Length: 518
Image (cartoon, rainbow, N blue to C red; front, side, top):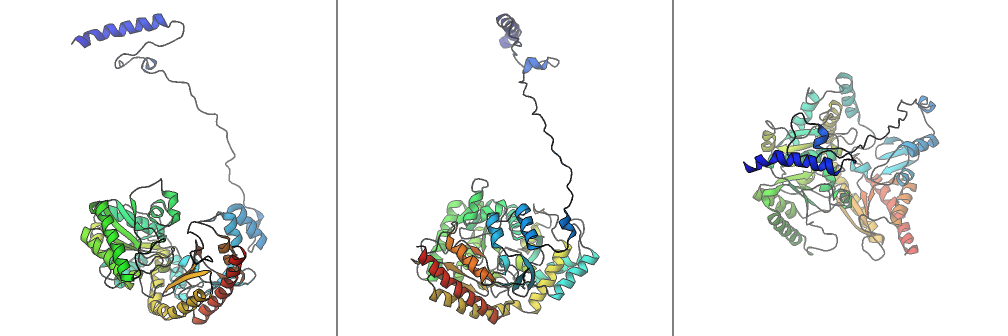
């Protein structure tokens, strides 16, 4: 062709021009067309001489343990120094949290004891997890010890144990409907992460809908699924998570009538499903009863309506039972408080072992389980089905059933409810309380009656209340303007009364503190 005939002449001319025009500057000839096989690489591209930065070696040899580690018991000063020097705390500034935390030497029932034998009522069961208290029942201890002495670890995809089979079978027996398949992880966030992936793969869809007033864990995906201010840390990092209208909006009401308000919230959710595109939504993921964000108690028709919407559009309903599961609300699972509601999947942690060992999991219906008989769930971990944790879980669940812990919780509910009602009626700084079973809490109020501050804000009144509670012998979880009242499920009426007496005194002092600092 004409172009092919001209190309050799253009190349030769370019070579002559570049050599003649720039002889003293060392320019290479201009490359025209693709290079020949043996052509000098500098004719194709002349690189810059950037080089590699100078390596600056540092000593990477292991250090030696200090003499402290030869001591069996450390002094409080040595403990404090080690924590200050080496321990990073979670969910808050390390220095402030370290100062606020007592050093616990032992636990007994609902009580914790520090090194000076001062005792503290564990009013929130840790992070709503030490459901059977702070001393391990002998049946559970024996089960762990036996497994420890036989097969302390096998990797769950290479070998299985009798303990894993027993726990899976027992969970299948006690879970409502056809929730018969179970996969295990270590913590609640991991279980929720697993459920997200399994839902997306099963449905072939990618959107996950969750509520604003929610908490689902601290991994990237579960924090993105979370609705409270902690989710802001992931706002620019991940997509596919959509927040839905809450049955309990923070700044307005759907109406005074609970059932009508639930219907309005459901209509808004239905509208959002249609606008998002039902065929793009893998799951609606929610706590049956919101825990970390204030123990919010929806009308039964709300959860029933969510179930109906999921059925209508082929969306999976996934219930986060990490806090509510295994008796906290007076039912074995939180969703059982809503007649006729059975999720497609549910997640659990905390109560399944009473926090004695780290175990979590996902329960699923037969239909979903059947899919994963021949498809990989896109989730796994070294400790999935760890023999010690599932042995602990099996013994703990049997203990819960044998001692009818959910029934006992329901018996304690009136005592806790009456005590919290007394606090709210008496103190300006207590806005409202909500209770179901032994899942309860108090919203802190300012002098005008509204919440003391928004959930993402700090307030000196909260720090004051936390300090005074500790000084009076009670420790509990405070998140934003909400104080958890979620003691171990083995608490007695007299121990609840002791907790209420401490709250009464400290809320009275908080009233005065707010008046003095208004």
